[in-house]
Image (tube, rainbow, N blue to C red; front, side, top):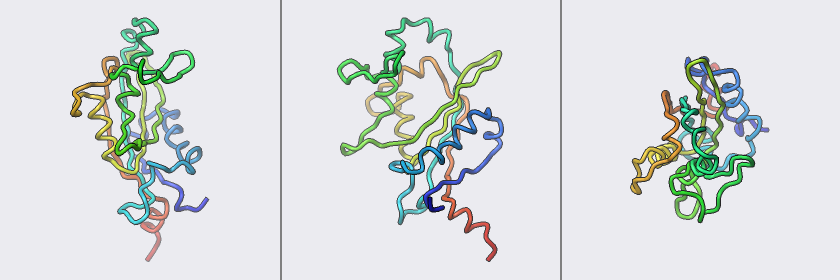
Amino acid sequence: MASSDRLAYLTCREAHAMTPEARRTAATFLAEHAARRHGVRIPDGEAGANGSYAMTQRWIHDLDRFHALPVAEQEKVFGRSKPDSIEMDDNTKPASAHIARVVIEESGEELEIYRRSTPYFGIAERGLHFVAFSAERRRFDLMLARMFGASDDGGHDHLTDFTRPVTGSFWFVPSLDDLLAAVRPR
């Protein structure tokens, strides 16, 4: 694979605070999905070409409250069946389901992002570390607005009734070629 086809990741204090599993999840993006770049890599000819935008978040869950729901209601929160994760059809899936709120189409095309999360737990809290990549930062803004009721339709993601973000950052992730060019002696 050519180095221009790979993305490099910047590190920060927040990344060091992540669990090893969360760091591995972010790192596997390169290994598992270098060939799947649609929606993730900034196109050639644009500023930051072959790089990506990233968003990291840490969420805290109220799992006791969520698990108090009957399974059928839990499935409606996500828009998927619980045992086998099959997406509900559009006639069954509630407009407030997580999948219904974060899958966004523009001009008939889905605005894709690549996302991964890793659960964590401690004595006092349970949640997940979330990382996402996109060719446009605006996609994150649109999805977050739809999740939190700030979009034109006024709806919100029912998942946010059971979980809340406590940290979040946006990043520009330059291409490996750009990083190498920046550190080479002139």
